[in-house]
Length: 469
Image 1 (cartoon, rainbow, N blue to C red):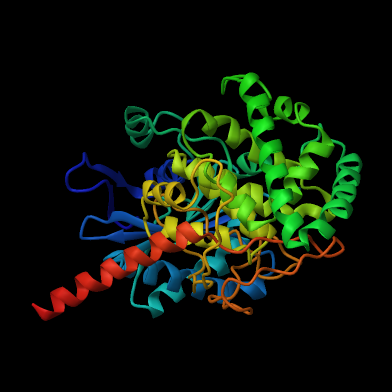
Image 2: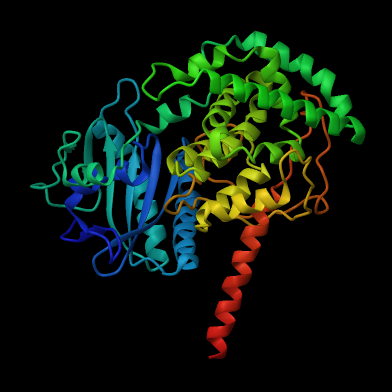
């Protein structure tokens, strides 16, 4: 680490000092809550002691042609995002994490990714923020791209610390922080289950789509579908609550899948493509509904198979909202990353993503949902515009921003365009399409936008007051 020391924590909290590449590599999973796989992770450093700040994570693009724009966008997003949060970084640490392919060694992975590491260092340097350390982590070993001293950073790499033996592991255990496996394992819980027949589920979705889409086109029948969807969702939540399982139970997800029929899953999945219905369901994020609702949204995301894969954006975002609102930031980041991978234009996920990145308190959003949609209300739509959302930014407690694809052919690709603009009038609904097109896809979330706008107005008022003084 070229004698640069890293510290975690704030001035009023116990300080954890990390010295050298070994301790940095060991600390990464505790910063994220999981072991990143196939990922570029960049962490901002602040102050003379290198306090950790914001971070950005992105799947490593398969095509080397994408590396230059990806490096520039990640550097810009992290630095600009840190400035919006209060301070420009004084330095950055880069991690490249990737398992070897079949027949490949960790050392070969390191050499293959060396040009990407150099691109990232150059992109940060062009913005006058130095990269203090760049590490490659692969096959249980780590390499430094910055340290030339073979005594501490040998060419063959160094073995990672034995789990649970480092200073970071001890501090994390004391603080109650745990690593929940790898990113790949966490995402697998939200992907189609092997216990569900893809053919049978897709057939059920086809039948439900043929039955519901014509009704969704009718303003009268659309409200009826919403009531039916909410009633069925409530019934499924009660069913799951009656089969409550502890986290230690083996294959909790598989057991939940068996409690929901293909037809029930199809009806709720398609019903939740309507914005009003989805926003009513978003109210189930506290009290006794919380845990079974989270299990339901995860189970429904796993039932979005075949041509209906994109429909998973709705249950994934609901799962992210419940997880985030109850303090499970890691689960929220993973679910939001997958939602944006399924549908990069899904506005509710993008708004929630931005709310997390801006450090909004979930309680503020909860209060908005309570005010806008009381018990039993059908809810009312709030016209809104799609915000301009910076890509690739992942602040502490935020979802993984880099899970968005650069192009449809590469799900691990670079983040898409840095700005997304509305292409229809504010408040206008999307046109429902059967799949070969898709049923109605929801617009954004009023409560998220309302809180975000209020916070921005308060920030502008404070800045204007300081300027006058």
